[in-house]
Length: 435
Image (cartoon, rainbow, N blue to C red; front, top):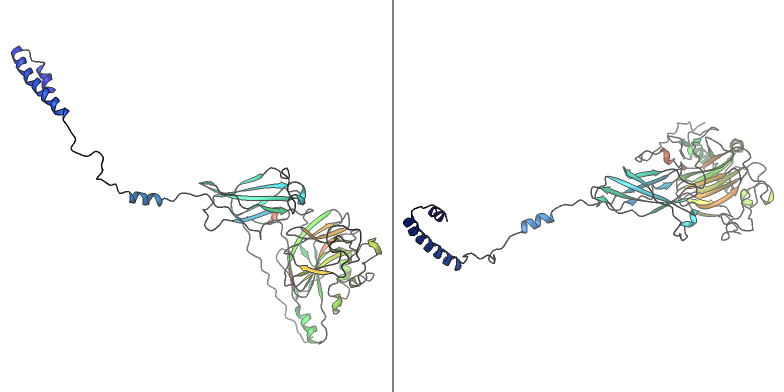
């Protein structure tokens, strides 16, 4: 083509004709060669194989980010008290979470909406959410009393939100929570009773006095009782508190009483040598023996006693006859003029025992003069009784022999991370046994 372009520039006619003949012959041969042209290489690559094993291995070794698995609720630490405290953990094979989202809602209709009943479609309110919760626990406040709340939680990281945990149901207390500390303003036997830090824990041991009494007798032993009361008293409104009694405790009585009467009884001589008085709190002179089966006061429950206690020991709780919460027509005579509230347990000849719940709840209604004991974990009513609330009433706890008791701490006082378990060391004073 370059030669042809140069030929066209030729101005001499004889030279142009001669060169044109040669060019025409060359173009003809080139056209003939193109018509019979074939490739010497195989374009199908049938005899070639591409090795991609290394690339496939690299693809399979890629570690993609996964969302966190569904958290596991810690039912031992999760509870409802003055606030809701929810605690959880991630499974061991779960991807880490940057933060968590806690959702909760109140089930309308009270306990019947979810506890043993069938919930209607309109029984639940809208879900509320706590976003970007750091750590593995959360606190929900601004609650309604005597209501059931359902909670769930899920984790989140760069891959997004994971699956929800199983829903957990928590029942709020039936009355505002009463915050108090243990107090020994009427005397404290340091050799057999010790209070923990914060005055919410107490441990009782038999002490040297019991050892001395046991050394001098072969028939019976003189047991002494130690009384602890709350550092405040109330005379109106409804109040609730909870505590836990160690299952190995020998004998612990939990309840309420008029402050003046408790002080009077505490200073009276207490002889606990009789076995049939082992389950009775020291009674005023006008009260009759609770073992006799009559009310402590006027007949038919017209006059209520100034105290109300439940007895626990060795992993059991003593429930007087007439316990329960379903009211019937018949009233049974029991400690403190208690009416029968259970059709399944009325007309019981004697009090009976039940397993000690992990936490015991006490609800005091000063306006109605009524005390209700609950299983604080499920808020199941254990026993109800009437008492005289005409004068200030305070929580009271009585120890006979070795035992320990822990008041339920307010959720509002908890730190973000749960502190280590508290331990109390009891140091006894050296006493001259020869005296």
